[in-house]
Length: 357
Image 1 (tube, rainbow, N blue to C red):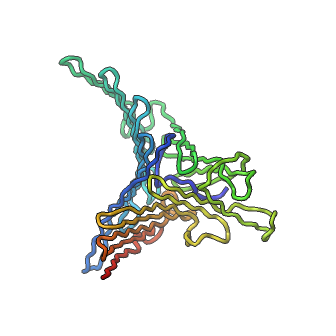
Image 2: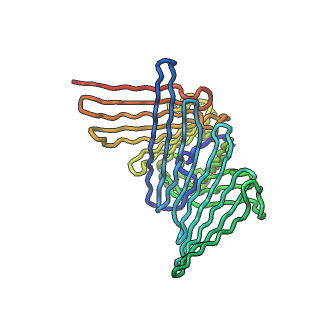
Image 3: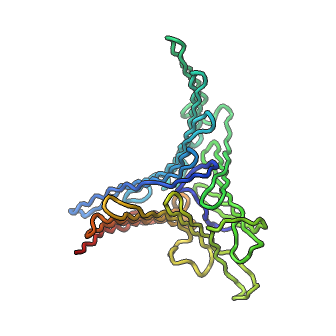
């Protein structure tokens, strides 16, 4: 079993529902304060990424300051039939640890509104049911509470398993999320029928599972023929260049464009031949886009790198982001930051501009 994360949607989504229309959007709000007397530099940055399909929105919100990664929240909202649903999953990336999970749902029938709120923190769970309606001049609401803050996992609640499927890039991905009385246990993603270039009779099936502190990827051969053309397969021959020797899969890559935004993911666990884009890391995910700004072209990219056995949430270790905008035909402004979550926190800030005449 390889510790790898090739199809991780942790930065992109928490849960998914099958659909055909997909959009990938987001924002990066950053404030940098420089005190020349110190000198000191303070950073306040929030990265928001939303993956939307079929009326559902799955959002990742990452909060960073000059010391590193402060908070990580995943949210999901949408409708299933007549029900409206919302979910918020909160993690402490420093410990790392699960903090809370809240699920809300609503239903309106014949003028009566029913709402439910489920809240889970480690070792503590509660469920609140509410119904409100109006009959002429009479308004009536009923609220029923199961469990209470500090009351523990009572009313015989033991856990929950949520499963489903959704399309991502060129693959259909299945997922299963498990939570118990102590909180988040694990989430697993599966993808089948990944084609191997040059070996038309074989495909790969991948199952990715990650907990708060670990990630595992199991890749198995399969004889289902698929059309996942956007996957890249990195192969090596340990026997030393034989045409039909032992073939070992040492990496997987995934690239696609979703609503004009480019997504690229790469995992490589081989001993040699690592792609240079990974540097000292074994895995990365990148979102990039080029669009029209107010006065000229605008380009933005952000990449997250993973360290095997890292100390932070989901083994996230390094983040780099940059943007460039042409404000006038003679003036282009650019900015970039590097953040090392593993050791030093905010490590690099680059401001630049080009003036031509």
